[in-house]
Amino acid sequence: MKLLVEQSLDCKETVIKITCGLMDERLKRLIEQIRLFSFSVTAEKDGVTLPIALEDIYYFDTVDNKTFLYVERDVYSCDKKLYELEVQLEDTPFIRISKSSILNTAVVTSVRAQFSGRLEAILKNDEKVIISKHYIKGFRDKFEQ
Image (cartoon, rainbow, N blue to C red; front, side):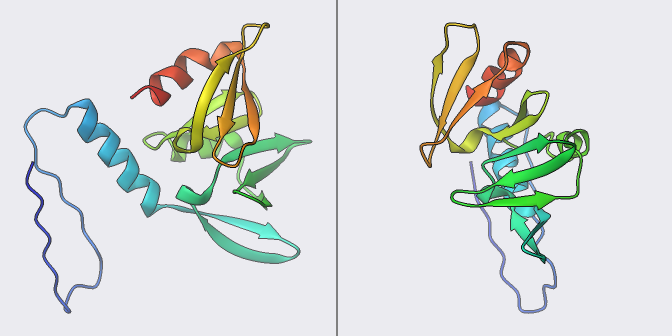
C-alpha cells in the first residue's frame, strides 16, 4: 500500500481518494474509519445545541420515542430517529444491537455470552450494553472485521 499526501494552501476542502484493485477487508475497515471521522451528529443538552463527532459517540438509545446519544461520560438528546441513523451510519463501525439501540463497535473492548442467549458488550468506559439475540449475527459480522 502506498500513501500519498498532497498539501496546498489553495485547497479549500480535504479530499480523500482511494485507488485500488480488489477491495479487501482491511481496506473496507480503513474506509469505515475514514467515514467515522467525516460525520457529526447534532445533539442538545441543557438548551445548548452542538455537533458531536461520530468517533466520540459510544451508542444511541431510544426511550419513550426520544433518541439519546451517549459519549464517554455524558448523554445528549438527538432529534434523529434510530432508523434514520441506521441508514446514515451504514458504512461505519455502528450497528443496530436491539430495537432501541445502535452501538459503535469501535468502543467495544470485550464481549461475553449471557445465559439468555444474548451478548453483553463491555465498552471502553466500562459501561455494559446488551445485544439482543436477533441482532447478534450483524454485530459479530461488524465487530469481527
